Length: 82
Image 1 (cartoon, rainbow, N blue to C red):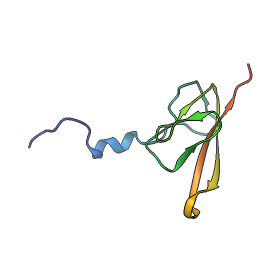
Image 2 (image 1 turned 90 degrees about the vertical axis):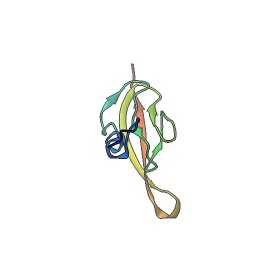
Image 3 (image 1 turned 60 degrees about the horizontal axis):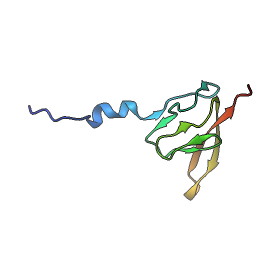
Image 4 (image 1 turned 45 degrees about the horizontal axis):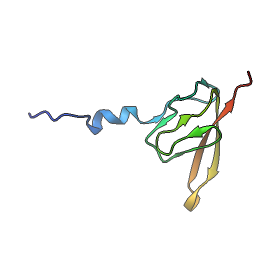
């Protein structure tokens, strides 16, 4: 058996997806998702494939219809009032 460097798809699948849940508090720069087209950036969220929080706050989700009647989940961060 020959070993090849790098990650295989067998183990890489574990790192994909949503990293936070609704109502959870996050700090600026927190990674919210990894490699997914099911989620889109909403309020106070930046990125395309890897979404990150643009400010400190609380996570909430909304849904909308995208192209071809496909449902998209929009990830938003409600900014905390200091």
